[in-house]
Each structure stands twice: as structure tokens, then as C-alpha cells.
Length: 196
Image (cartoon, rainbow, N blue to C red; front, top):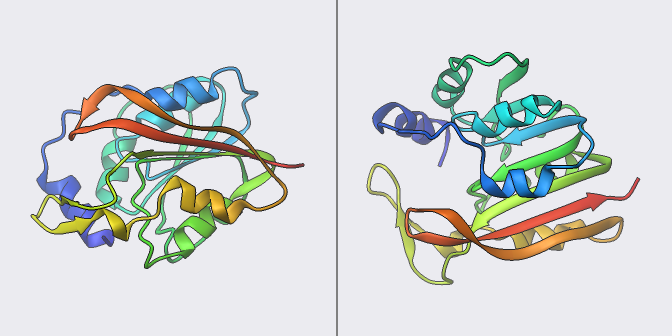
């Protein structure tokens, strides 16, 4: 699942994006003081645009230049910084008050991805990780028919295990999705605050 894979997906698949932010983002972030936000795996940019509209200074990153180009092409009155970044290979250069990742495929074979997510959270900042609640066995199929076993991917619990002391878990729940997409009906939501 490298840049070539994701560029091909965003090039070859006809998306009908809603333009709406993820519901878990709205639920978990509404009411928090705005600061600097990193939207990881920003895809169509809906979450980044919503965060910017709430007053956050947003950097949106994705492994796919095609996704970034499509996201940046959507008009918004708010400034958003769009950056190409492969978290498996490189950590963000700065830390943020919010690091948000929705449905980011974190391969267990690339443990630096989760490590870089955690390291990008500034003291007093929050990590918001949302993932599909998938079975222990089975697989999903990529746009090109490639099979990806669920067991190959880190779960929010795996990321939580990296936090250790100095973090407060604010949310750790399973929640029904408002929009039932791709047969995933339940999300796992982890929100943690790094102590100042």
C-alpha cells in the first residue's frame, strides 16, 4: 500500500464524496479549543476543510499526490496546507494540538506509521484515531483486487499500547456509524490527550 497503490486508486476509482466531515471527528472535536491540526490520510479533504472552518490551522497530509490535488481543488475560504507524506517512512516535521486519522491503514509491517502518529502530538494535544471494527479473520479487497488480511493491520488498541505514561484516554469506544459504508457498521474511536 504505497504511493503508487493510492495514486492508482484515486485516479481509477470514481468517487462520489459527500464533502461532509467524518461524524466521529465532529462528535469528538466540537467544543475543543482550536489550535494546530494535522489531518493524516486526508483523502478528499472534507475533514481538513471542516477543521479549518472551526478555526483550526490545518495541515492535511496524504500518501497520494492525486488525492491531495483533488482535495486542494475544492474551493474553501480557509487556508489549508496540503502536503505529501508517507508516515511509514517519515515523521511530520512539527507537532500539533490535534492529530486526526480516520480509517488510516496502519500496516503492522510498518510500525513507524503508528509511532509517527503518536510523536506528532504536542504536549497538551490530542490524538484522534478512528478505525473500522473488523473481524480478527478475513480480508478486504483493494481497488485492484488485491486481498488485504485484516490481521495485517494495527488496531486502535495497538496504537493505544504505544502511548504509555503521560497520556490520558478520553474516549475508547465502539460506535455505530451514521453512514454504513463498505459493510463496516461499527467504528472504534480512540481519543487520547498527551499530558502537558
